[in-house]
Image 1 (cartoon, rainbow, N blue to C red):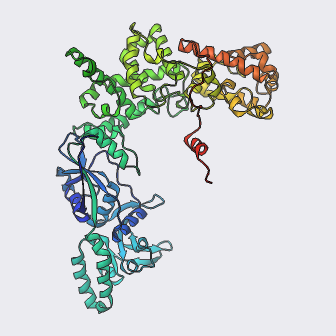
Image 2: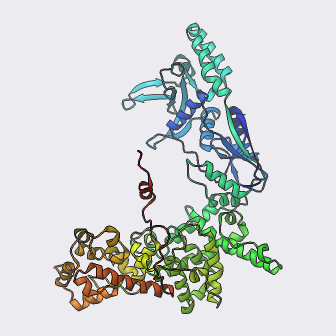
Image 3: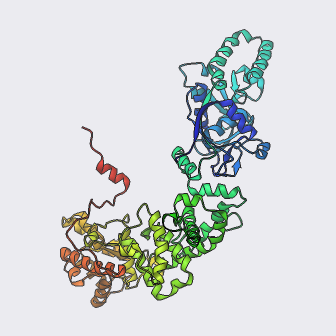
Length: 636
């Protein structure tokens, strides 16, 4: 953000709200709709009425590099849409919209209750209660229905009737729609009160209210951080993320959507569709969707994932053009899909590559199915789909050739078992996009293949789905022909979904605990394998020798299994039947670790590291709460 200029100055609240009314202050189109509930509105009004700070606003001057489609603040008059705004509100939309609708707009406010019921409200200040120090100020802010009558007892009893100006005067209820029109209200009040004969009784209260409440509104100043028009796109995105901690974080898609909208293109419609058109998000989510399932393996592909893949093509195009122009080395623009690249993605480039990239994601789904990865929950790395899709989009039908596909499979499993796509992956994604297609054409191995090392002892510490390699082992077993212990069926996608296949213990947890085997040991992937739900129910908590005997005997719903057939099913899971039947846990673990290791080495196309030098740090496969609990130092 070097070079970004900004000013911080206090502005009169009234002037800011009037600029919303005129349309000189608007919202960038990526801002969400106004959603504050009735209680939050009352709390905000109460704070301003006591001259308490309600936080700064942040604006962006228009006319610079960042061109967003503007839209008026909700409730602004139609004429505001015709005005070219001088600034856009980046932070403070909810607060400013609430205050605008309650005070300036002079119309009933559409809001929601704490129970999320849509309601319409006029807001008042109870003058007497607002001056009573024993009463919380929020209690003095009253919301009434559209007809200005509060009813109870199934609408039989009227509790408060403010349906006329005279009733407001009599009950000393000040309408917030006149908070900046004190002189008009005061004139009307004096006329009414003089006629009624209670002016002397109420005038002191009215004067105090003006001094202690009204003046706080009319003199209220809001600090405004104004970003200059030269502020770059990335800085706007970063700034918005930092200040927008209370709502949905702004991502690059929202900013790109607003920038494209300024040129008349509806990026959001491309992604989400509308009443008549299925959007790209739905098309991808339904790709290879299994019967009975709502979505397929691409369900979690995000809009920014898609833009990232498009950006790889566009930035590569720029780099190739620079090379042709004679530039080299550090003069060449990078190939990247990082946030800055997304924010700099021209609409023409998006249109040029969008169809090609979508086809790449569809091919990625088929590729993953071929690896026996069927569900989002079983996907080793969501982030690895981006380079996979980009590579497949780039090489087109060439991925169908066996030699190319074998290399792609090897690249994929090196990424999984090298555990390379866990975090900070922008550089790796770009590198794989450039290096892997070149490898398919006879070039050197991509760094994801050449630099990856799998440690033999890692198998002992892979215990949960938080590990990409853990999920990778399960997929490899199914791919290599593992057959269910009970049915003897391989795990194609039909069996996988139809039989509710998941990763289960081979030596059951209950048996291991009874033998005082540590959880860290029996929970590793070495003691787990893909099995159907019904098979796992038969296994239960019995010793392997017991549940294998039960499988061989059969029952009224499950035919008996010949021992030699069952042994074959076990071998398909890389299990030694002799060791399992003998309940030889330690020997089983050592033997299966070696077998799984050979499976992984085969997938990666290289040997594993068997040395004694430990890897730095300890494996951590708990969620963030678990880690925090472990690392918190108890108070003395």
